Image (cartoon, rainbow, N blue to C red; front, side, top):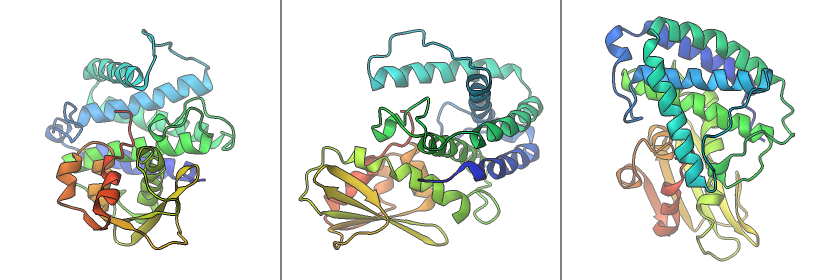
Length: 277
């Protein structure tokens, strides 16, 4: 289980402090989210808060306006849903966006704290290949959404704040650990003998390490391995979050990572996508 609930309020404090410091010009800067400017990413974060409050507190769910028969259908629907909201949010000033994010963020954090972590979540973590997910994983996925969108803003305005922002071991490790839960699904078609281990290292100001291990029933992710790793991949933290959220492509990341052993096997890690895309 990855525990993230205690971090939501802290993450929001960093976000509100950041947004209140932005100049009008910075609100209009482009981000790695391609079509979205800083203000659009902030609006998307607000949308997430509002939808959670509406669903969990008020039992209000909006039915899709189309049939969802596949993962691609779901992604297309969500992309349109997000685009519609971002377009409408142009009517809101940066100050109002910030005020609404501050007030709804507190309600959001309270709702997350009330959830039974072992109960089935209302939404599965589809990018990890799950049809049904436990609340702790769904909430951890929500944490990654809030973290990486805030970091997109920080990246756009030149304030990655390695020391005082959110790129810290306390806030970053839950993010990357959640992302890597998608690796067994990424490797699902990768053939290897039972017991094969792939070592994944992500470096911040300290080093985090995991092992992807082939078992009789598929691949699993853990912090230890009884066998010596046949392949290894090392990424810096900035490359890792951008790669796994599609901000950069695998080919672009390849020049920034270190592969050893069976490089083809280790390189499959570059295909992990831990967002709905």
